[in-house]
Length: 141
Image 1 (spheres, rainbow, N blue to C red):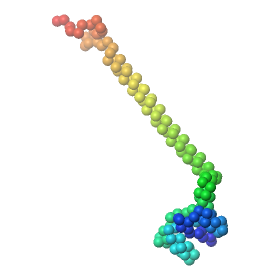
Image 2: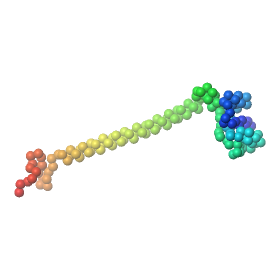
Image 3: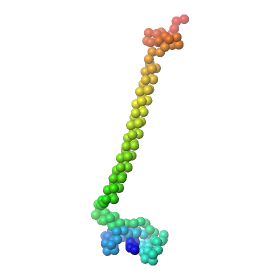
Image 4: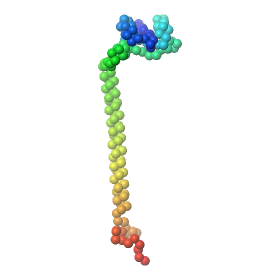
């Protein structure tokens, strides 16, 4: 079974690149105490907590850091397509909510103006007489 090398987070990128190339490894474990981790792995044990496991670094990570450029592979493209689909779905949902709110505002606005127009339209009193501009405000006795 192949055991990846353990490296310090302070290791020089070029040195790490040579280590990965020489060992034929695509990954390395990053540990605060790489010697402790290496010893445990050589003995067939898990990396102990005192080794301070911090994560993994891949050959692709190292190459991207050295050349200061993102390397896209087929997984990155599928992740980008997934991210694009999620973003499109989110945007569609937001747009639908916005359209519903606008429609509701228009309906409320129309109903409000209709109520206002009804308030302004001629009204009849209890006896069926329609009041308009020529109707006196006070009725004579």
